[in-house]
Every structure is written in C-alpha cells, then in structure tokens.
Amino acid sequence: MSARGVRTDFTSRWGGVGRAPYDSLNLGVEVGDDLVAVAANRSIVAEAAGVEAVVWMDQVHGDVVVVVDRPPLPGEAAPRCDGLVARLPGLALGVLVADCVPVLMTDPGSGVVAAVHAGRLGAQSDVVLQALDAMVSLGADPGRVQVVLGPAICGECYEVPEAMQRVVAAFLPASLSTTRWGTPGLDLRRGLQGRLAGRVGSVEIVDVCTFESLNHFSHRREGVTGRTAGVVRFSL
Image (tube, rainbow, N blue to C red; front, side, top):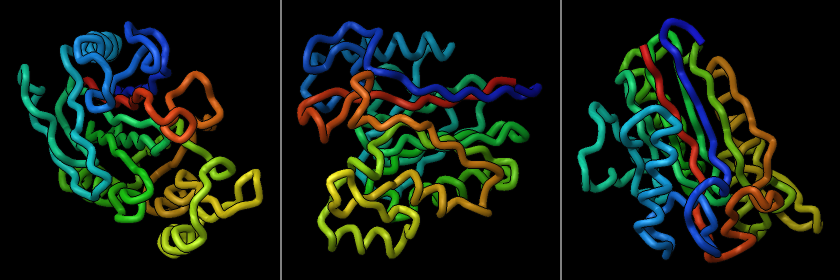
C-alpha cells in the first residue's frame, strides 16, 4: 500500500440476508431474488469497502467499457457495459459473477482502477484489453498495472462443445483445457493470463473454482443462484 492506496476484494456467498437459493450475500438484481434483500446486501458490501455505494454494471457479456467520474446517484440505472474504469479517490467499482471471471485491475502509481466482467464472450471480445486501454487514457502505466483474476469456474470443470473450444482457443490459446471427464474445456483465467502477459506489470489468479466451492455461487452447478462480486477502489 502506497500513499495512493488500492484495495481489491472478492466476496463469498455468505454474510448477507438472503434466503435459499440466494443465501445469503447475493448481489445480483436480475436473478430472481428479493430486491430488498439485494439492496441490503449491497449496502453491506459498500460499508465493508468504506463507501456509500458501489458502482455496479448492467452486464451484457460484451466489450463495452465505461469511464466513471462520480459516485452513483440514488436510484440511478447501472451502466450497460462489462467494464468500469475510474480515477476518483473513494470510488468503488464492482463486477458480478457466478462462474465468469471477475477481473480487478489497479495502477497504484496513478490511482486508476478497473473492474471487468469476463465471461466466455467478453474474454473472446477482448474486454479486458479494452479496459486496459481506458486505464491508460486516464494516466495509467501498463507496466505498473496489477491484475487479479478472481474466483471463477476452472478449466477442469468448464465443459464446452469442441467447436466452441476451438473458437475461443484461437483467440486465447492458453484457455485450451480438458475437463476432469476427458471432454473439451476452457480455462478462461489461464487464457486471460496469457493474453495479458507482457502487457501489464503482473497477473495473479485466485485459485478458487466456483463450480467446486460451496462458498461461492455457481450458475453451472446450481442454475438459479446468486452472484458474488469483485470490488476495487483507491484512496489518496
């Protein structure tokens, strides 16, 4: 932690007020949960992050990145995108997942941070490098940027059709994997790590598979379920 401090956190599914199948810290508003419970859970996360409210996204599995320059207003619609970038002290950015990759990016030197939702389609459309470009436009130095790839489904559990695997692996070669059942798979975190290699200062993978971990929501495992989050912020 430097004079400009950056903070990255990933939630588990516990510590909130929700009931099954969203028990208990579901942060997603579009998964069928009681919105009052979701609002309470989002307040819990904001308080833990030391802010009044986290800036969330209306995620669409695309490549749009939005630069945020102020806290969210009460009742304001979330930006329709899959990446948020900011350089504003005390502003927290959040990304929601339930098997996709939550990507948190920070440059402690400039105070520029980003939160990115990288599912298969987003990773394939290069949303993470789009976010990196937006960070650079705000003054970030790619050589200082630290990337954390949070809890997500692993390559041994993410089974896909062979044709789909070929398409993704053509763009993200390191994503090519085989499941524990011997079928075609994808490891998006490894693919993104390979894509970012040489472009940023460091890439860390949080070694937790959401499909295997009962402490995390997993759409593949449960179908109807909640969403955990990655949250990033910086302070002067």
